[in-house]
Length: 328
Image (cartoon, rainbow, N blue to C red):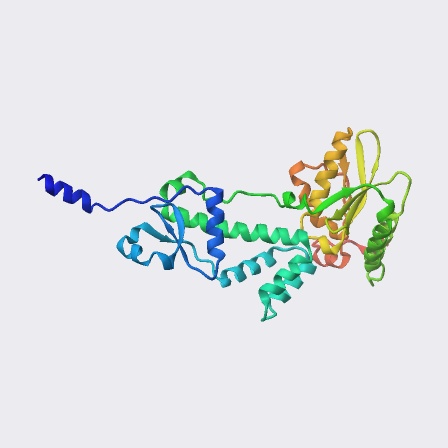
């Protein structure tokens, strides 16, 4: 009977567990996933990654000991690039990257070269790609480790892109060096409206001209890229000891859609708060209405808002038409 028990225990399979997913081990898995020259698997007994070609015999003897790591083929990288491009709000780089993806030859190289021309965008790409790979690894762990799944660690930590922008931009308030760039940016924006055939756009051009005019009460908050390029500005005036009014603002097209403007507003607000100011009034005009939801979390107080209404559409949809003869 003793021998029977010994034999039963000897035949009992070993229960292997997934190793703890530390940051260092996570980086090792990512490296192996991206290595297209070799194939790797996880040795559950040793808690380490090994090349498949070196453990063929051991894998046949104890198949439960080894686990294939998540796959990451060039096609996965390509799909990730497509997804990343679809998230971009910057029209310039969105189109450039789409052209690179559709070029048919040297896609990966052209894609990287385009990213390299814009350090902030390149950083966003690597953050996005890293998040995609981490998510796949977390799902893999959830499938093979009950404790990992129950711990809720499968969620990829959220990270604000503002943290990525901190190293890519600096903010200055010395106007002299950048006044020409600010004036040139204003000229381009105003010309776009001024040469329109729509009278409403011409009116907008006049408003922007007045906003761009300089007074001795103006202060400028200017964003400069890590490559010493002018990226955008906010012009404001201090109405009293607690109130600041933004007059006009703009971001160069090259840097739009990266979250830079939000980063500028948060940084400027922090500096103004430290100086004792407590309220910031923001104007919205034409295309800038789209950024209004950015302020929702601060529970803003509406002051005024102008809209343009089509009288033709209003009149055609009205069920109670006016007596136009008596009105005129």
